[in-house]
Length: 163
Image 1 (cartoon, rainbow, N blue to C red):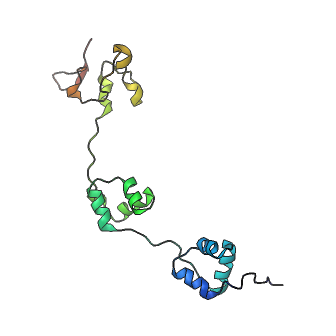
Image 2: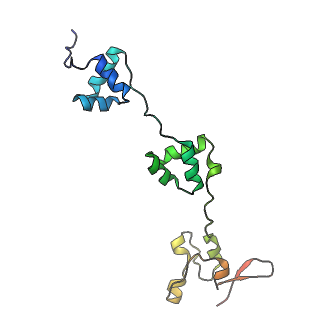
Image 3: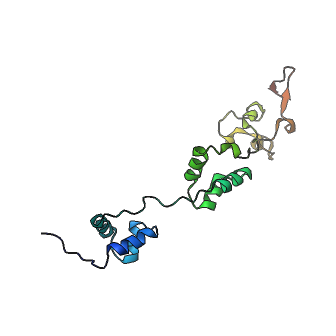
């Protein structure tokens, strides 16, 4: 015994119109006030399919310009209305990494391991013991030339300065 068609108002023409507009099964169901499974069954009955994915809003020229201006993937993702993973896949798939502006070099905190105030711990927050020893803070992670606690020997290697 077959099921009775509870929604005769959902015809093939109605569904084709929503598919043409790019609606998903769920959006069609919400618009027509029914369930997604009802829409699925109607689409199957009429031999119709909705678009599997929404159309991409990828714009290569805009993406290249943003990469050249130093935008982060988060900023680009917000601009296009996509997630950061999508932006990353666009960049790698289309080989656009060459357009990325070089980020400024950060100071290597490994240099602090030769400081006389270094604790030898691996985390950045625990690496410098300057505050607890002297009672005042300094610019942690400053360049070697600006730090008075580094000394270079004849070979150019760093050594500890004795207090």
